[in-house]
Each structure stands twice: as structure tokens, then as C-alpha cells.
Image (tube, rainbow, N blue to C red; front, side, top):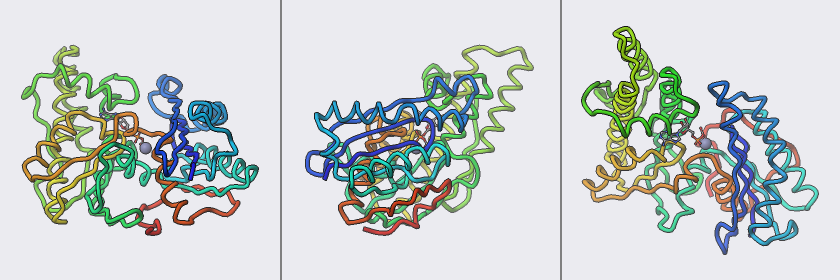
Length: 341
Ligand code: KG4
Ligand code: ZN
């Protein structure tokens, strides 16, 4: 089954062709980062309008790259939520219009299920069951995964998502959007031990997270440095490192707990923050101690992309799922509501 995947939940237009027999044939992405950067974050209306502009050229591009024509496509998968409603509607309308015109089925895919399954596109995919740490700009969740659609939420953030904390921390130190890669870059030149940040909610049992306090801690630290006349690049790097270490260690402690609680020893990390090298290293070390394994996608498939939507959609389409002709998207959509395969 050849599936065209469309991702438009936020500020990236992602399009891909995935074939159930031949694997990923082509994928293309247009990132709107430059468009939103001047505003310090994503402007939803601009995002929607840009998806409209990029969608059809990207579809033509992946067809050409894969050496396919439209009539080769068997089904279309599109992100139906969670995300920005206007942005989601672009992908959903486009998918439904093409599916109607080509007389093929279309299926709305859950964006976080897409992230969760992205490591399946790699050479050594994880096997069920595993614990998944989903860390993106909008979500921080620990999930027990027993199969596609068999998700048990173990814990999540009570306030900011990990990626959101990276973005806000970067912004308050005057760094551009998106903050995650910027903080990671500065942290490489940071002096370990100069600042010590808290590890929120690790001193009590449970698998919940809270990252908004870390952002306030960064703000206070940065303001104290500025008040003392120190706004140097080195200080930014030192704060970036202390912040990143706090997030990484907090996530690592909670992942270890989740593995212990479930008795599992394979961990999948997915979503934009799973591209973070320090996080990968820390989790690899922890899983090494537990004689387990960590799985993640290549960096381009950690952040938003069409390939993960094509893949997740393909699994569900193969099982016979598809939508009717109505165009439905959901800004909020708990992943546990998805049907099991
Ligand atoms: O999964 P994603 O592309 O979009 C959402 O579904 O939200 O995640 C984007 C988030 C942003 O907050 C971005 O700052 C963060 O992932 N991110 C990173 C890194 N690369 C992207 N955070 C930390 N380190 C990175 N290398
Ligand atoms: Zn995402």
C-alpha cells in the first residue's frame, strides 16, 4: 500500500510517500522557522497561510523524487490533531479533496502517535512492549506502549512541555526561536557546575513533570547576572548548560522510574526534544546500566515531518481504518482515545 502523508499541525509542512512493502520512498519538508522567528514564536494565521502555499508543490516534489504518479497512491494520511486548528485544517482539507478526486481512502492521524512511531522508520526499530518518552513543543508524556493504539499514559507535564521550556528559556535570554537547538548549541561551551538548577518533582514519587519553575529559575539567574553587569556570552552558555542538565536529569530520573514500574527495559524517545544529544547520551547511559536499549529516530524525524504521519497512517489504513468525507480536526486529542489495532 502506497500512502501519501501530510503533516501541517504547526510550523512545518511535511509530505512523504511510504510504501508498506518498499518503506519510505520520499519525504520533503518546508520549515516556517524564518517566517515566525521575527515574532519570537509561531503566529497561527501565518502558519496556516504558508501551509496552503507549500502543500501542492511539496506533493509534486515527493512524487517526482519517488518516481511515482498520483494514480500510484493508494491512500492519504494527514495529521488531524493535536495542533493549531487552522494549520490542521489545511492538511485535512487538502487530503480529503485529493482523496475524493482520486477515489481513495483518507485517514486522520494523531500527531503524537506519528512521533511515537517515527523510530519504526529506522534500521533497528523497537519491538513492543516499550516505554515511550514523548517530548515535543506541546507534550511531555511517559506512555506504556503495548502495540499500535495500545497506550497507557503513565505521567505527563502538569504545566509547560519540555520543548516549550527550552523555547521560553531561550527567549528570555534573547535567543531566537526555536530555543531547543539554540540552548543545546550554547550548552556545548558552558562551564559545568557554575550554576545549579533544581530537578523539579524528582524528590517525590510519581511520573508527573513540571517545567515552568525551571523557566522562572532561569529568569531569576539571568536577571541576577545582568544586575551584576554580566551579560556575557559565556554566562548565557553556562545558564544554557545548567538548564539543559536539569531537564535531562529530570527526564532521565522519570524514565528510570517508569521502566522500573512497568518492568520493561526498552525505551523509545520521540518528539523534537529527542533530537537533543545530551538527553540521548544520558538515557543511553541509564539503559546501559539496566541492560536495556534506547530507540530514537534520525534527527530530521524527531521534529515534525510527513514520514511519521505516512507511516502511522499506513499501519491503520492497512487495518481498514479510514474517515468519511467530512473534514474534522482536533486541537486537543488524548492519545489513549485511539482505537487499538
Ligand atoms: O516535535 P516538534 O517538532 O513539534 C511539536 O510537536 O511540538 O518539537 C519542537 C520542539 C521545540 O520546542 C524545540 O525547541 C524542541 O522541540 N527541540 C529541541 C531540540 N530540537 C528541537 N529541544 C532540545 N534540544 C534540541 N536539539
Ligand atoms: Zn510534533
